[in-house]
Length: 440
Ligand SMILES: [Ca+2]
Ligand SMILES: [Ca+2]
Ligand SMILES: [Ca+2]
Image (tube, rainbow, N blue to C red; front, side, top):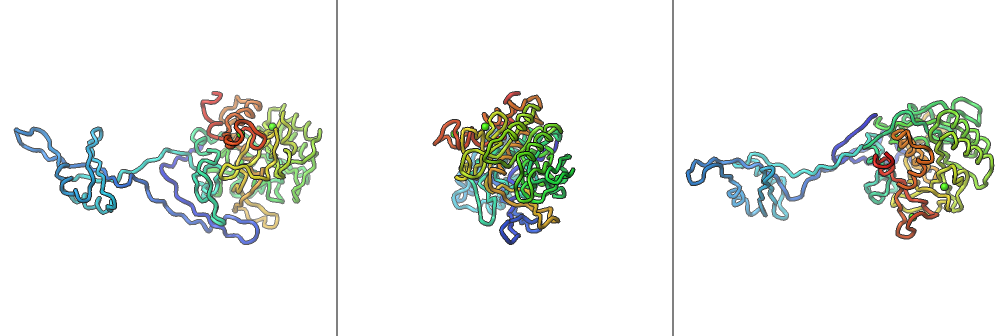
């Protein structure tokens, strides 16, 4: 298990938008990095004061010079307070004082042994080194600029709290997420080491190569290679992807192809099946396959749909599927989301950053793009389930579905307290889901 602990504030990555046309891509050559200032308590200095030993019968022992110091600098210093447990003095400068200049003056004072800014430490978080992580507001939203052009910022905390969950685990390498989609770009830098054997049901081939782009983006959101100093982080950093191509290059897949892929996934050890797809009609074709996979222990995760209409199938099969709708970077539910009592949870689904692939540029395998739609919410939940199952392998699929529901944040509590048909139980909270205190 790879844990990457970085103390303090992160370098700020300013992401650029290099690509013309109607898709905006991130390009490795154009990242600008700037270090933010190191935080400290404003107006405060911490002083180690030299002790002057007074050889006097009247005043045995040590006498410090802090009173003299205060008197000497009183025009610039508001107060000088002894801090008994450390033995240091906290100096508070008067308003408008140049703290760094005052610090350099005090450093030269013979009665001062050392001066420091009162630096602020922050809690440790498992923050991966993937350079576009700051673009992944859905994983961690501090209100950062997550997209430079057009400039986008979200609301702090409108995220799934991935870094907090990763403090506990980044998952084992065994959990497999079957992605029933358009395939995967096998050579993409952030996916090439994350694939297990899949199948192409459209072309009857062993390798499920993407000829559209949707499947590559979806797969990377769930489980891109993480901590590799490239691209993005996946929700389940160490899970593997089983690419199953059941959707053609125009974005269509027949129910029979999708059903075949579900059965293949269930028969070949997938723990989670992601279906960022669906149709408006119910059919035994999908329902039987869902039942088959569910009874083999798989957790089925599907997108609720993007047409402001009732939840699509297979997501609407309540007994077998988690139906996932979208939230944006302010924890609002977009108006285009499908709705209904079948909705289980929401997950970030607006401007979700992931791996880019295009049929027209098959050799471009190091770029990233944003996707909007419940298609990109679903793999976030699928990744969450994979992380949960690798951390707590004793959890059954029914329990996993319940845990996803009960640990979600009721983001529309003010208008619809409790379960509702817009957001289900709420927006996924990976921290609460993975918490060792739940079902341990
Ligand atoms: Ca990466
Ligand atoms: Ca449901
Ligand atoms: Ca609610």
